[in-house]
Image 1 (cartoon, rainbow, N blue to C red):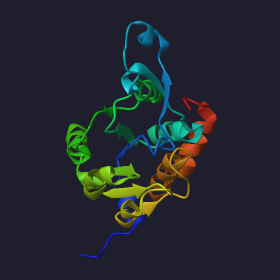
Image 2 (cartoon, rainbow, N blue to C red):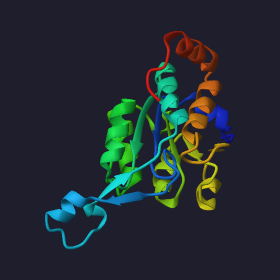
Image 3 (cartoon, rainbow, N blue to C red):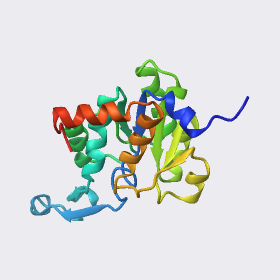
Image 4 (spheres, helix red, strand yellow):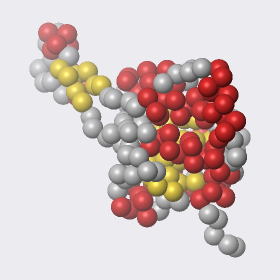
Length: 197
């Protein structure tokens, strides 16, 4: 069997799944003390006694709108659980959201099955070794520009931009261009106006 090129792999993609920390964000975790919980007698101020916040890039938000216009289904798989991520997922209208997934390979399989697709029709974007079980099963494995070396070695495509800085947009563009949909999607988006960013 000849080895498939990244573009040939991308042509088959119908579902785009991705990690959050390090892909949709720059990977940094920010916590502010929750003074209300502190006043209620919390002896220790851990991550549970704090408010978590994250920064998301508008290019990646727009990428989800472009993906939708290109008939790509979208979703996230993350090991951590965060209300901030749940809020962003609702804002972006992601179809598949799996938080608290300690086995991303299993979560990937479940989503692909739920979507009625095969692994060859799904892409996964990751940045660290916890993403490898999903990436190894994906028809198209994408690493962000600042992914760990082990992840880049096992990917089919590496984005030009860093995680949290438009890397997801790079993945969407790569897939839609490979599928010959990019120009039509751009024209449709511009004609209809922004949906979400």
